[in-house]
Image (cartoon, rainbow, N blue to C red; front, side, top):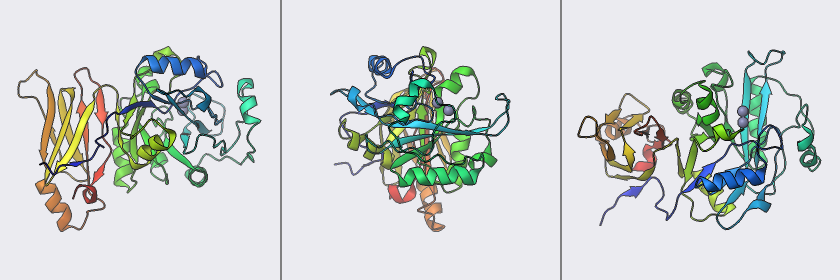
Length: 340
Ligand SMILES: [Zn+2]
Ligand SMILES: [Zn+2]
């Protein structure tokens, strides 16, 4: 019998999930009902309609095959008028309970369609400052009030290392935002993700649509390995990091046995392993123009070196699966202590 340890949970079904979408409540083209239908059509089971600066409970739309998560996207921009040059912090906040309507602040210019929802919340408005300290206060408040906080689309936000490095208390960051990809702003935020890991943040990579129109529909998602399609079960899996991000490839299993890491997946052009240090490897198909569906990595050197240095809580590995059409799937970082 195999003693392989499953790094991605061995559950009957992974739920296709989009955590970032806008509806007619703010600046999206489709109503929450229409969004549910559109996502269902594309094989999704979980959706968070995360409108701008408003948290809305859409659980009335739930059915046996589809779960709506409660959340919103909160943004603070640099002062000044010219939107072309203003940096912004955008955070998605995801409620751990569907009826949690607390929100960190109210929109400055609420859209009329958002007003009925805002009337439901008793939020003391707060002074908003565009600086990391102020953003960290907001993240801390969100955590206290039962939210998982994601740092969104550094590329759209015109942000770089100096802007995101000071952030603390994040649950995840967008490694791919389909709205950014579609607009040609950037490829993937894999370097910012690596930076955040290197700074000691145990955060997860998320792929999300940031859908406003049909053009940014179903291009980036996460696959969640939850036991059941219930709010609690999905949130539990998200909190544990039992998911991977993708713009195409599927990861079917990820296991470790001793010093051997094995991944199985849909057709891939290559599979790459990165770590906290210089240890890295990219594996290719046997035939130059072929495709591969599994890869095995020998972790002996990295494990030994990390253990010698006492880095079991800091040393990590993570994988990227490169699909045949330029799409990618990303795992989270797995720490040595989880692999032993
Ligand atoms: Zn945004
Ligand atoms: Zn957005």
